[in-house]
Amino acid sequence: MPEQSKAYRQRWIALAFMGISLLVISLDNTVLNMALPSIAKSLGSSSSQLQWIVDAYVLSIAGLLLTLGYLGDRFGRKPALMAGLVIFALFSLGAALSNSTGMLIAMRALMGIGAATILPATLSILTATFREPKERAQAIAFWAAIFSLGMGIGPLVGGWLLDNFHWSSVFYINIPIVAIGLIGGGIFIQNSKSENPRKLDIPGAVLSIGGFFALVYAIIQAGMKGWTEPHIIYAFIAAAVLLVSFIIWELKYKNAMLPLNFFKNMSFTGANVALTLVMFGLFGAFFFLGQFLQSVQGYTPFQAGVRLLPMAAVSFVSAAISALIARFIGTKFTVALGILIAAFGFFYFAHISAVDVSYTKFAIASCIVSMGIGFVMAPATNSIMGSIPLDQSGVGSALNNTTRQIGGALGVAVLGTLLNSTYLARIGAVQWPVQLPAQALEGIRNSIQGAHIVAQSMPSPQLSQLIIDKSNQAFTSGTEHALVIAAIIMVVSAVVTLFILPSRVRPPKEEK
Image (cartoon, rainbow, N blue to C red; front, side):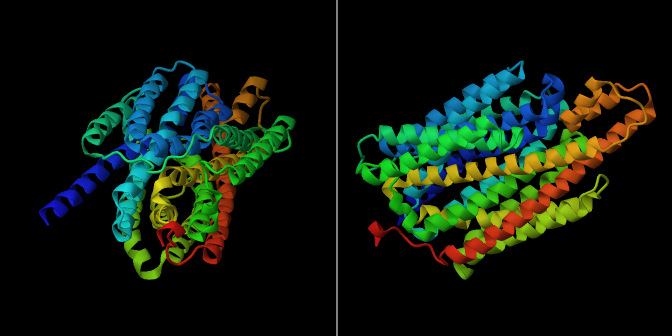
């Protein structure tokens, strides 16, 4: 009994340090969003360049997750986690020292390599450490709660850093967190790897990296340039050819890195589809939430972070209790309920969307969304991880995260495009009282941050205020349209979940 108690305690201590490793990833997502306006002003970044600072990281992760998860299964998940943390810290330092937008985009892409190693490693180590299904569900709920907490407190941490230090501080903060994860993880986390390692699937790795890279690149570029540009169409064609080739190869090769029979289990497929659609709405909304609070409502980064803090508390609590709810009403209904709650939150956001919306209404909307997302993440993730063989938990976790990243990239591209097109249309319809210089007009069209910079340079206070008012109204109108689409996507996701996701997790056939 004492030995069992000691093993139980060690498992949960190890999970705490896995949580710290995960925290650095989730913090980075939202801390950066708060820093975008400051980066734009400091480095002169355009709206499309701001998207690339976000999307270079997403592109790198989406392309490499599957291969790095597979390598972790084969060579050891703990070494993969440690290596990922070191890579993430090293290029966080590079990002902090960036003196141009191009350098920052490159560093973010290299940080994505570390994140693509960390993400599948934490979840696959968790699955190997917590073998009993009920305890595994609780551990995954904790994992999801930590991820939600990081995303929730990211704006507060980022806001405080930006109010007191240079924007580079949002990258420096990653280094001490990584150090704690490395030391604690090195002591308490037990290594695991596939007990029956297969031969390296090099063709599969090459095809998957190329295919996912081309797909996410095409999605991102479509959001910036339009969906009918020739180079974007070519990228989509390349993605289709590479991914179809990948599927054909994996079906034929006996040592496939991704056994496609995973998809026969609807606990795996249904949860992946649900998470992809949820990430579409969530990533797209978060891309402009920090910009709305700072650029439209005029809060400092720290003030904006404080106003997003209730989201962190609600999301953490809802994620933590989601395993208990799923135990009573089942995975399907817990996930669908969470998605519908989030959809209602997005509809409410769109309804109250205005330049001068009260904080009370804003807080209610954000808490509704975060409650719904909290209910979704852990049960859906547990459904995926509980439906695949332990021996292949790394590649299963990687595919789970890959579909999330693709959904997120689509959300930023599609909703960002919708917001930008509405913004440009509203700005284009403005009848300015005087003829503005071409450079000023270009700055106003470029981004809301650019519009505010132009306004500050105007000699007339009345004209300056007019530019600010019109750009704020245009941005808010675009936000409203994007939030409605996000809400509709969430409703579709809930319906799909009710149709295809089993009520209880179906274990893999090998474990029956």
